[in-house]
Length: 436
Image (cartoon, rainbow, N blue to C red; front, side):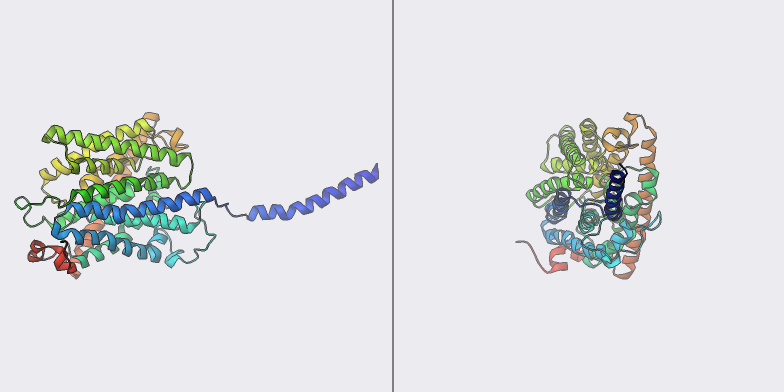
């Protein structure tokens, strides 16, 4: 009996000794990467990049006059290249590494320390390299959207200086405030995929640009009609498809959250396109092609902050509201206040982003968003006020910083082309090329 007990104790000791290295290994084990999540995020990154080139490039390029189409497409392409390098050098680090509640740190400057097995705390099942590239595509499209407000009149050199400075000074801090561990996220502001960070940010910056640069020459009496709406329809279609990467990709996994984000994105987009179309049909007598594609973009914008928090019914209401309010913003409000937002960057992205952010506070449901992430209809009326404060903070910083950057660039290189260059066209004067 004693011998049996001794043998049992010996065996237990051997097993325990064998287990200790395993326990130590488990304690040091890094998060397990998921191939399905990684594949989906690689796909989402490509989809979001497609939103800028060729999506936004064609959408904006088709809406300007023929003499400015190459200059407009060039803006989207050049911004993609510029922001990519800035993101690698400093902006990613400022937005998504630990720092203060206001700005991130410097641990990823020049992507230092980014290894094959690096993982970010916000995306533990995919390589950090993929997370970094996914967030890069958001940083690319945001300043590119601003260009719609000053289309057909800004110098290319001024545009490059402005976009570079704006990405570092405005985009990086706001991305950190909301997503990277900053104070707006701590306040409980809900922004699933960029209502504040991308759309309010770009829309407000666009409005400031339009006000500082002034109106295009000949506005009100020259023909300002789009030169090729087929380009714009193709561009809007690419934006719609790419937006599934934008919203569903923000789940950072290939799971149920991504599926619901995709569903509500489709519903809100279709609802907004129809709402804009019918609003225009009622007020102007005919439904236009430009109107329905603009409505679709408005729906995509408005559902962006809400896409991970609302159910299909909430998405339907958000889409209907966005279609009507953005139609008013791009027509009635713009004409009443007299600013020249050339391609309605503020009317669609600023107003649509604001509406979507506030309505997130109304329609967010905890069963979809997760613990504590619920809005007015789910018993948390205070979320609406939280959303409002988040929007106002972003608007204030963006407006002030954008104005200062524009004035600095104007002093250094000048913002606007000459009157003669504007009349003749930006394609030939800025790039030495024309469309035949």
